[in-house]
Image (cartoon, rainbow, N blue to C red; front, side, top):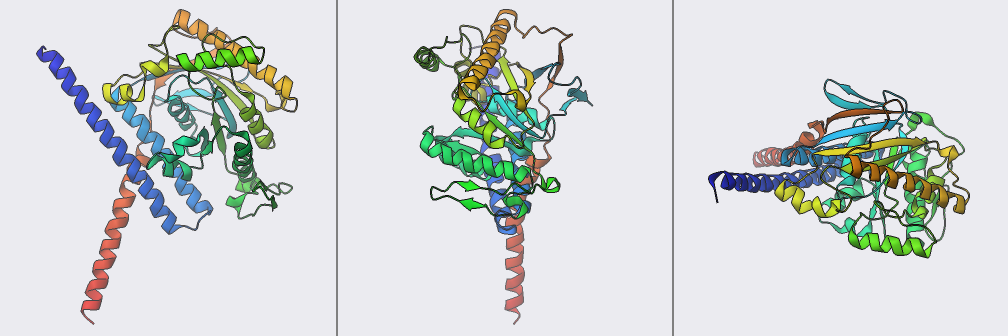
Length: 399
């Protein structure tokens, strides 16, 4: 082994160790901050929710900071001019910024485990990182430390058993919708009624926009990321339902998205359809095998360029009420996404017409302040307790 090779290996080892320490310390501090906030504010209060939202900002800042430390990536965002106004994404003082709608549903193809990290960051360009809600597998709820934090984030965990998930989605999305219209629990309201099975209903007759809470719901209709196994399952499912399998994406499942649209329909402003491509991934390879979590954090193997193409759908134009029409609409959306990925693998970009689409290139910039604050809060709280304890000891020792 040459000196240069030895240096490279040593550097990768140091980076890996430091990234793990950053993750453990940052996550633990964030969850500890949530626990401190729970002691300081009433349960279910808007003040506590604001603090939880702040820890959401801190978490995405932590994740992107680690990715930038391990191996910085660039981001190339293109938008469809026909559905998204020019200038929605722009650069200010070298940072990517945007003007995204404050009540949205985001759908995307699912290639690697960190897709959601990049999509979460995207919301930070509109200062909406604290208002994201993600639909996740229920097994993720049991992850030590992070599971507790994500429950406080009000992320939605589903078991993929519709009998159970129906109530979960109804209550979670119904509450999000009610809060967005100023008539939910964050405005001091109680459910209009609760059924025997636990399903909650809110009184939305009197909307109070002055107490509105933004939201961005992120879900992956494919249900899992693309791999040899999921590709085979998707092809089998496509044959079962009489559809043609795709080349670069999985067949989407309509139930979760359709349910979300029906429950959030009164408040949601737009559906953002995002197609993601990663440099280093070809038509015959799989992103989840190249950019596995150990490869990212231990070897520093991250995509040098993340491509996102974004278009918007007017909710009123989506055939939510007719199940068959909705299935066909979603299949068409995914067919167009598959064609876009074919172009990406052929040309290394989405190769869009500059007259019809706008493209902005930048870096994954983040605001480190929330991350720093949540690192300080637990320590400050413990030191305050120790100080109070010491002062009480001095006081009683003189009595």
